[in-house]
Image (tube, rainbow, N blue to C red; front, side, top):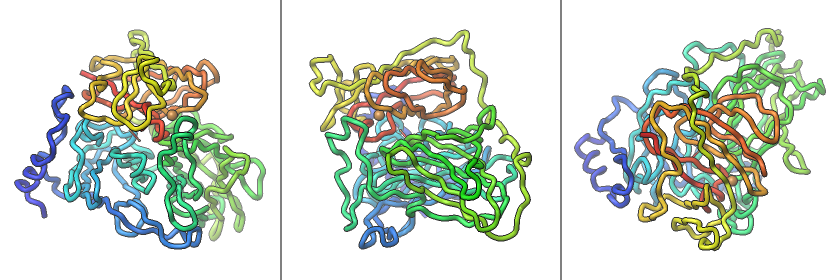
Length: 470
Ligand code: C2O
Ligand code: CU
């Protein structure tokens, strides 16, 4: 066991660069958890994609030669995880979508020092909300997620809902060829457009996995898009019944107000969707299909086998709501954010640019590629007052769709200038070309919170900013 003294000494040895430019002090490990729920050892490892490539691929994961583990937490119960870095580069973990103290948010230079090779970092928080979430590296994110460091989190409700099966699906591509060689993670030509797509398409690191389920049972299927680029357009197909038997029950971890039938659903990087499925009779299969490209493909499937559970749709009950404080929309202040392309020549637009090899994008004409602590452009995109409600107006003036993610809060997606939106809580929202989307949230937690496009080539080439709540 690592002693407290040794642990603090390790923390103190971390580089102090950058700490001074932020108002809030960076997180340090000041305690030792009584017992870690998870020890996550970031490491280079191997994974066999089962004949889809010629030899096991080199990946990054948190357990030797295994996919990134599913993490399970309990709503309202303290959670402890120790991140150990056995890689040759720094790393951190961001708990995407989870409302937690800023110091635990895992953003290097903004909320904590990077965790250097051989170092470790303890994350501790108590999740207030239940649902489906996501954890991933936030250091050199494009490369570290592209090689594996992204996994699912299930936070169990205090009172468990009544499903026969609970199946998590982590959807992502790998930019890897048949010989196990990675393509460049950043391709300037595509980074300036929709981003670069991978060739090997997986769910839970497997190609089109099939799950055996009981006939006529209720399944909770938890979908996460952890891909760094692809925006999926998902449908559910039932081999015995053209009317797909699927209903949407939650978005980004939060139960929606009115359960609705699933149609063709857009779901982008960083986003989650929980759907309920009533499985077909013995021997029949249900497929989850991506239809975002001209060649649709089966992402995963469920095949009914065994004893019928005799379920009917009336058995599906709404999930319990998460404890989110109501919004004060009347008194809300509006803040506008424009997502644009940068010209590439910063002077032209007066774009204020932090160090990065390429800059293609900007938020309110400020382009931050990575959170370089020496950069002068690192200042908040907005300063918010603790306890106030804000309306953020996201305007996309680019020809691409951007999944915009705000750390640390759930925002209520209120409306769009282009389409009808059923208001719902989310932490990531797709903003279409020429669209303005209004979201509202309570600035109820102190700190510096990142806000960025979750297409990671966009994040890395300028579409990053942060807000300060004080
Ligand atoms: Cu999942 Cu800063 O992101
Ligand atoms: Cu984007």
